[in-house]
Amino acid sequence: MWPDRTIDAYRFPAKLYKLPKILLSIKNHCHVEGFKECWMIEDVHALRGSSAKGTFTFGRNLGVWEGILSTLNIKWIKISPKEWQKEYKLTVQGKERKNKLKTFAQRYVNNSKSTFNVTFATADAILIAKYYKRKGFGYEKL
Image (tube, rainbow, N blue to C red):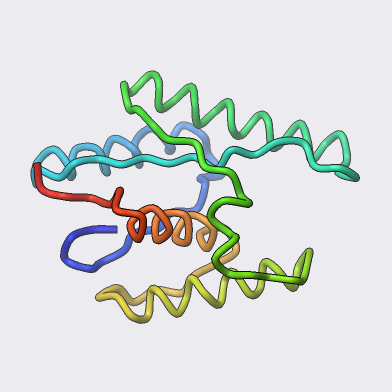
């Protein structure tokens, strides 16, 4: 989320070597424009009833993010899903829950200066950034 009310959201790249390039592009944009960076990672963990493969994938992806952010000397804040999702007061689970979160994210994008379709792959990131911006941790001029 940028001070001019635009939003960028990226899907986790299928080719992992592209992730550092995306993050460096964002970091460099912040540096050039003089913006304070605020990076967040969802603090995921094993879920009861999840398959071993699903749990391993969660942990692997978190490790990839932490490794690349550390390598690029980017500090981040961890946020639990319960913390950022509590304001939506959702009573549904599974795919219905994901659909509702995607709808909330699309409304937020539609109210910004951006125009793109939110996907399941980008919805959580947009809502996490919105949560932190609302809490006063958004991007600011240095």
